[in-house]
Length: 58
Image (cartoon, rainbow, N blue to C red):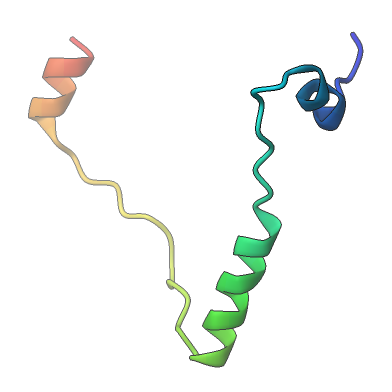
């Protein structure tokens, strides 16, 4: 299996758009550092919802 190059793929498709997330991530990290925004502590909390389970799994 050949690894596809994203830029070659986008060049072959005139309507394709490549989204570069790096500038947005750098801006977010800079804002968090400048304004000392605290990062979330701990992990996600899983809650039991029997109605959702019955509707989507059963």
